[in-house]
Length: 222
Image (cartoon, rainbow, N blue to C red; front, side, top):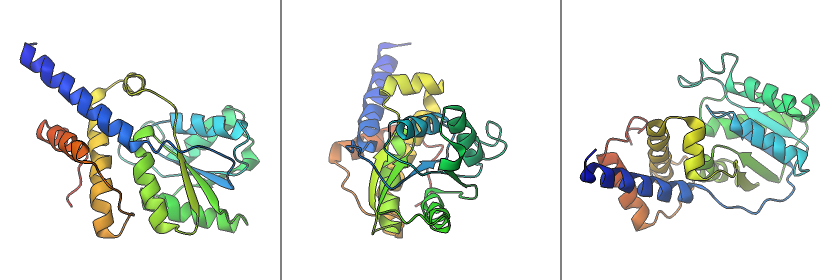
C-alpha cells in the first residue's frame, strides 16, 4: 500500500468516526414507560435491550421488524422473533416482551410498535428506542415526527467505533450504512418522514467525501 493510499484510509476512518459520533444522541437514560428494540442485522440490540431491562429502566419491551435482504439468512423467522428469543435467553421474562413482526422500515417500526403497545393496554408517554449505535439519530427523528406527544430517548450498546467494526467483521458495509443513515437524516425531513436536525458543515464534508470514495451501496435516491 502506498503512502497516499494509507493517508486516504486514515481520512476515511476519521470521516466515518465523525459521522459515528454524530449519530449517537448521548441521552441520559432514566426509567421509561416502554422500550422498543429496533430490528436489524445486529443481535447486540437485543442484548443491550435485555441489559437495560435487567437494570430496571423498563418493564415493557417491544421487539419490532420482519426480515430484510441482509437479515433473512441470519434470522429466518424474522428479526423481532430472533431478538425476542435472544432477550429471553439473557433473562428477560417472556411476558415482558411484546412482538411486532411486520415492520419493514423505521417508520413502520415506530407506528406498528405503538399499535402493539396500545393493544396491550400500554400508552406510554416516555419511550426508549434501542438500536444500532449509528441508528440513534435517525430513529429519534422518525419517532419525533410520528409520535410527537411521546418523549423519546435513545440508547445503544456503548461500543467504541473500532470495537463495533471488529464486532461486525467487515468495515465496508458499516461505512456504507453510516453514510446511508446520515443521508436519511438529511433527506427524510424534506419528505415529511422525520423532524429536521442540524447537520454541521464538517459532517457534510465528511459525508460527501465518503460518497466520492464509493461508500454508496446503501444510498437511497432522494
